[in-house]
Structure formats: structure tokens, C-alpha cells
Length: 51
Image (cartoon, rainbow, N blue to C red; front, side, top):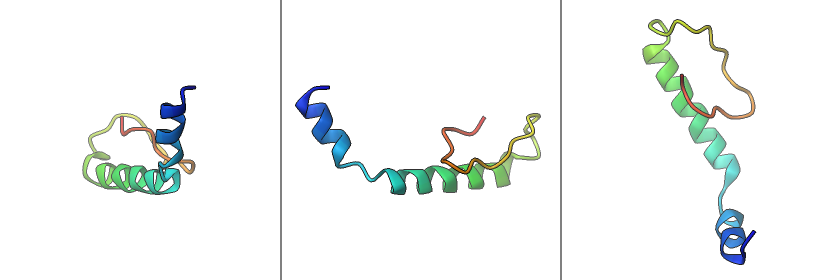
């Protein structure tokens, strides 16, 4: 990994990003969950995306 990449990744607050992803997931699920044909469970380690 380059020094630049290492420095960029080092300053990311991954805990904050996980909280934001989970908030977005919860919001989208509350609005779209009834339309979603997939039976999704709320991720505990951080949502990657809402399907």
C-alpha cells in the first residue's frame, strides 16, 4: 500500500461510517421494506448497502 493510501485510510473514522451506514439502512428499510421482496435482517457489523 502506498504511503498516500495509508495516510488517507488512517484518518477515516470507521466507527462513524458504520453508524451512518446503519442509520441509512434503517431509514431506507422503514420506507422501502414493505416493497422489498427479500427478507432482510438489520446487519450488526455495518450495512454495506440496502438491496
